Image 1 (tube, rainbow, N blue to C red):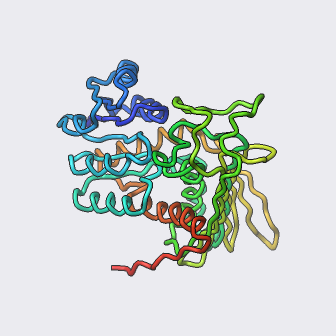
Image 2: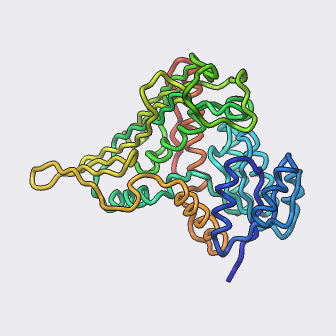
Length: 358
């Protein structure tokens, strides 16, 4: 049985789900870990049985035993590490977002083209069981032409602080951190149409609300109650070249009654909700039908989704199976994210020039 030797770059919180999923894949071997914090890297190496520990990721990439890497660092480090890894001959799984600027996204795409290596973007919700089930209905034409989708990911009190709240390292706030998940989920189910224009707004009215008592929330390891340079919330209307549109709103902090996540798609033959749980609306014999599929997981299961994502990456590396979330998709999502920020900053709609087919 073929084995893939894995190097993980960045041993922070998100790396644990990568480590856990690799550990459960019989064809993956967690071989090396790199982190600026040597103690943290050694702790993860002891926990997951990695043979090598590095504080400089260049040394990990120079190790000929490493076949592939997971990049789990701050967002602003994604582009240089991914490009270095590709040119070092490694296949790459990079956490979302692909990077923080559209310019860097194109540079990564060019590196993939030049090296011929595999790059998988960590759009983990594509790998959820409910997503894949719904996609079967879509691919078989049960919803007809999907022309509209809407998504929300609202936190009342959920600014993690730390690097998440530092725009220089994160690239932005809830839009680029959690909004990317629901935007990509809808866009993927809509058939990945090319973006035509974006009109967006961002707001920074509340800050991280460290003063709030009696309601707990996740805090990053380097949480600082004062530091916050990212938006509180964002909203946008995204138009696509095929005439479809997507409406989205997301927040780290908002005077809302409750946290919520929703993702809905609408076609000319039917519609569906993928979050908060899988639900289908259709028509038959001049009657509107509400359909609740009988499934084990009607909503996204975090552990299963990550396991499926890691399994797919290992399979692509070892067997050449097509990547479900390739670099081209990462670039298109970066167009949307950066377009929303630019639209908010300039106070106008941002247009994208159609790319002629080769």
